[in-house]
Length: 299
Image (tube, rainbow, N blue to C red; front, side, top):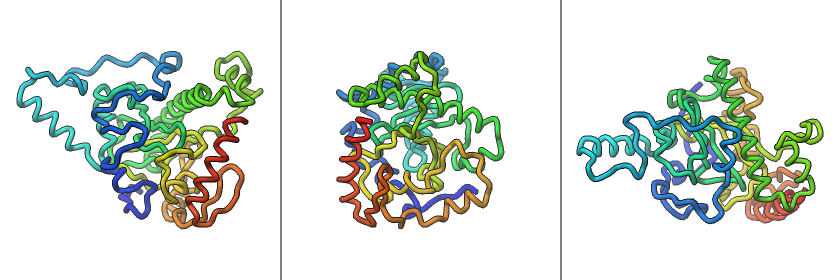
């Protein structure tokens, strides 16, 4: 069922696909990203949940490791590799050589997955989980049906990243939250999960028509509060059936097809939290979401 979606069927813009627009969160090109003052703290939480990073593969080099003594052939190969991951293939650079990126971009990686911060986050915390061994252009609808073992591993890895995102929400906004103490006890393992269950603070899923060729799973906070959430398609791509919950996979072909060809992009804008309908008035929704965000943080 793999297909290349046109921009009109996607939840992101062409300049986001090519990376030609500067992300407000960094203000710099990805290759030269430095950790911003209020950078996500997820990298400091990885050790308690994830296995240590594997040693760098032979032949790999970090973005700072291209020294002057490198051979001209090596430099040519590096340049070729960079070009091969442009546009819709941009996520391939992370799966091929995650060590080449700074901690402000790559959260953690292992033999099978890479977790990164989305370059254009649509919520307060927005990460991507990238499988490393799935060929480009293979979508989750197909991979999940063809390989149940892969689906199980992806769901387990996404659950780990979801916990990290929940911890990051706790770090950033916990002091404002009424349920902060109990939530932290559950995350720390000192309270039973039955006392507090995830009420949808973190979403985990995939777009039915992926904008990028490499399979990627979105793990993001529910708020939709971000400078990068700029138009109707951005919002609806995460708040209609176009966004398929990973827990619901595998999907049968009929449901997968219905999601792909739904009229999600033309749907009315409806607040995820209170259900208010803003029809096509995106700016009004954006202002409303800012108010909802403040109330949501205090819950």
